[in-house]
Structures are given as C-alpha cells and as structure tokens.
Image (spheres, helix red, strand yellow):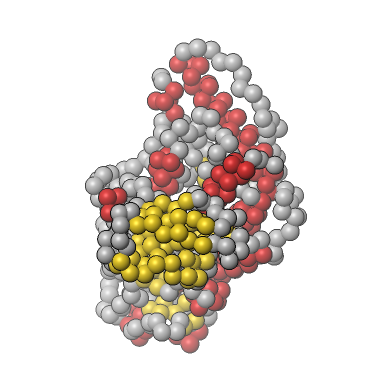
Length: 516
C-alpha cells in the first residue's frame, strides 16, 4: 500500500495525556513573516463548544410572542415568565441561568441565531452528530469533517514535514477522550487530543528509527511519523503552557476546566486556530426541571455551567489581552420537541438556537423567535430558519477570511448563503470570481503604505481598529483608474492591528494590517 493511500486509513489523533496536570532574535524578514502570520491565519482562534445530547432550545432562548401558547404545549417544563431574563427590544428571553449571556448580548459580544438545524432531521444522536461534524446532507455519508477539509485544503502536505518553521504548532486541538470526526480530513486527521491524565510522553523528540522497505515499512513509517509529531507537539504545548503563571478564577466544572486550558494555550503563544471542547448531559428526556421550581434542575445546571464557564473564559482572555482574536460558537446535534413529555422532560427535536460570541461578534440576533400556536402535537417540530452550514461557511469566510469553497455536502456545486456573524466583514455570498481583488503593501507598515484594488462605481474605504471603530474614511466616491491606488499615512497611529475595509454596492473586502 502506498504511503498516500495508507494515510487515508489512519486516524491521526495526537493524544497528549496530563500535560496540564499540576499547572497552578529572528531576522527582521522572518519576524515580519511571523507578524503577518499572526495577523492573518494563525492569529485568529475559533473555539467550538459542543453541547452533547441535544439542547432544549425552547427553554434556553424562550419565545415570548405567545407565551400562553407555550405554556399549553410545554406544561411539564415551562418556566414562569417573570423568572426569565427578558432581552430588550426582542420577543425572546434567556433562561434564568444565562445572566452572563445577557450581559454579553447587551455589550454586543454575543449573537443569538434562532432555529438552526438541517433539512430532513435525523433524530439519532450518533447520525445527527456525524451530520453536524461532517456538514453532510442528511441522506449522505461523509467520512471527513468540515474543519478537517478546511485544514486539508490549506495544508495538503500534512503530516509529512510537520511541524515546521511556518507551522510549528498543532493545527487543531480538542480536549477530551478520543478524536472526533470534526477535524478528520479526507486523507488524515488533523487534531491533537489533550487528555486530562497524570502522565506525559517520556520521549519528546525521538528520531525515527529505520524501517524495512516495502508496504509494511511504509505503514510503520507513517505510524512513527505520527508518534514523532505527538512527541514534538507535546513538547511545544507544554512549553507554551508553562509560560502562563496566572489565570483568572474559573469554576471547577468540566467545561470550565477545558476552556481554562484553551485560554492558557492561547495566552502562552500557541498559534492553533481551531479548538473543540465538550459539555455532555443535554439528553433531557426526563427530570429536565424540578417540578416545584422549573428554573432549577438538570437543564438549568447545564446552562449555568455553560454560562459560568464562558464568562470565566472571556474574563481570562481579557486579562491576557487575547480576547480580540478569539471567537466562540456553541452547537448541539439537535434541539428538543415543542411538546414536553409526561416525564418532566423533552424528546429529540429539530432546530435550536446557536450562540456566536466574542469581541468581534456581530451581536444582536438572526431570525425570529419561534412562533408557537399552542395547538402543536407531539410529532410537530420547529421549522428551520438557518442551515447550520450557513454558520460554518460564514465563520470560515468572515473570521478566517477564507476564499476557499469548502465542500459542505457531497453535492460539489451546492453553496450556503452567508449570514453576518463577524463585525465589519463580508456578509453577502459571493462566488470566487466576484470577490474584490485588493493589495496592500508593505504589510507590516511603519509609516506609509499603498492600497491598490479594482472596483467600479462608488467605493468607500475605512480604516478600523480591532474593536470595530472607524478611525478614518480613507476614500469615499468614485474609484478612477484600473487599478485604483491610494497612499495611506500610518504615521499618527500607534503600533498594533488594524483593518482596512473596502466596500462597493455589491462587494466587500477586509485587509488585516500590522503597524510596527
């Protein structure tokens, strides 16, 4: 079996047990290259929080447009309206356990996306989880994950010669036992798994031993490549984690302990762009609430753990000054039924809300709070407002500024309309041919730089800081000449990261700039 063929059949998960147990000058050209790397693909981080079991969206984000109808169809789990956390100028409220979410929402650092799912919902935990991880259609089987395919497009030579000078750090990290499908590419898995145990690899940088020629030798060689990567990545992760001696307080819960590790690695300098953490227990068929007080119980405990962990995570990111380059997203394999059951719980349903949070979140909400008639029967489900692959596509394009068309289903020609999830970025679905071509040089810039682009009609060019504030209107009006060139003066601006946004009637382009 050829090496390339053999690699397709090997799950490449790098288990790093217990590495965090017990934690209480390059040349100018190379340094500029490192700064650019931080400003674009390696500087930005997306943390995916998987709510395992199927979260009850109707008790998480409660629709208030016809609350009396909701009480008729959910008599076993409905909470008193005056106990809910109302959201100003909306027709929904948060669960009482989500006080932190409400504060993030008010600060426009959290976005509620109503009724997310996929057509022809499969109500099996295992199959629906695979659909969300792979981004397949419900009637198709994909053996790779959407994030794995994204990484594979950008790193086609992985795993040979990785880690390397350009990409010294893991490409994805997931915390928990075993690798998920999420980071599995079509050839190879891309995730490094961190297990919370008390041992660590004894061999950190062992040379590959000689192997025999032929197919058997090829298989052994690949196994050893992955073992060596495990050792090298383990050493790198340990080194960056040891740079951080203090973190803000976290609750002693499953999810908080995972997010604490993520924040520590980001603060220590790990340039991994993708993380996956997990919180289980959302399969609340019975005893979802305490009958004497519907605001407490199993589901309330889970939402409080989610709320408190994310709030601690955000405060820790703020303390370490990494918060502007981290975004988070929650997802679950499905929601729960509209009609509650007689066991004080809810059964497998379809659509549910998603949350996207971070300083660069678009904020507010997308879609409408579900409309409940009060005459629904057991088999009724919430209608779909957004396909979950719209959110994936939007995050890849708007947060990582990926121009790649990552295949989100087996139908190669199928695309998913973007929705605004990141502030001041592309929000309209564009084909690769429609994208606005622009150049900015030099980058990093010291004093002056040139912006060059092709565009017809009226154009507006803004200089924006990392908090989304417009610092200067660089150009507004016609853009004569092909290409249009504009000299930009950065002398008065302090060193740091900036965004140049170019907008026409149909197109939008963002360029990330470092001032040194």
